Amino acid sequence: MSTSTATKPLIQGPGLKAPGIVVLQLIFIGFFTLIELVFRSGVGILSGIALCAALYGALRFGRPGTTYVSVVTPPIAFAISLFALTLLFDGFKPSRVGIDVIAGLASEAPFLIISALYGWFVYFNEKAKTRPSRKKSL
Image: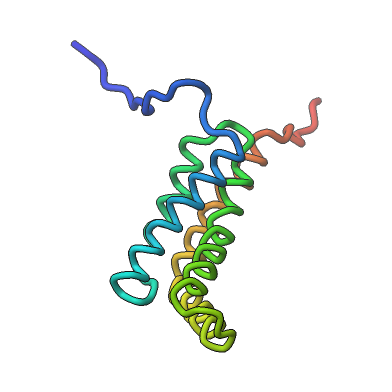
């Protein structure tokens, strides 16, 4: 009789360091934002799912102590990639770029909020587990 246990994916080494998480999330989110901007000329659900998947992947495959970087990076990576790609597609027209960037951020707001809530919950939960107990000993 064999017992079934939950197994984590086999990773060589202890996991991703903070710079690796930042680069991986920036490339992952930027790629899906590029695909969506090329085919739909706007961001939507594909970029939102990529945001959530990038956060979850960073939390799952990051080293211990990289939770803060995993939580903070996706919104920044999305904003940077959206601004750069909008500037690339629209050219240097400040009013057009500004409107497109604000519209893109607004369309991703639900995904950004959901991933931020989940990420900060994981971060504060991890921080609370490492803090010593306040119970008084008798």
